Image (cartoon, rainbow, N blue to C red; front, side, top):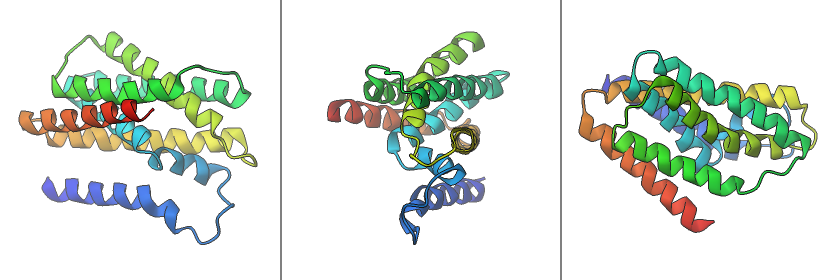
Length: 191
């Protein structure tokens, strides 16, 4: 299991930093821009992974309903962001989501599936809005959207694998949650 976790971690790091290696900047429109967007900010990256980890912690139907709720709400909010409608306190909402998701993991908070899906759906509004508002100028919105929806699903999947890998190591899950929560607190102070 450690080998798989190491491979997924290395894959995640390569994907997160691959944008820096592009030889011809300025060609980042469309699918690739959308796909790489969640990997380029620690706030999005941690939140997407945390949704998967918490879903794994909750178990059962939450493993697919919680990430699916996040993705659906994120996609709707992205279309609002692309339309130019203003949403207040987006950065604060994103930082708060990282903090709270970390705390939910650290304290192994168990809530009904509908409530957990609603919680992450609310967080997804801020993340989706930011994805939509930050669309590159020459991108086709739906192609860009497909990119960030697929990368979000991949990050949720990585979080699920991480959560399942640490399932029997409660201290590891709690430590991971504490690190995510501390990162969210740091982000909130930086705003």
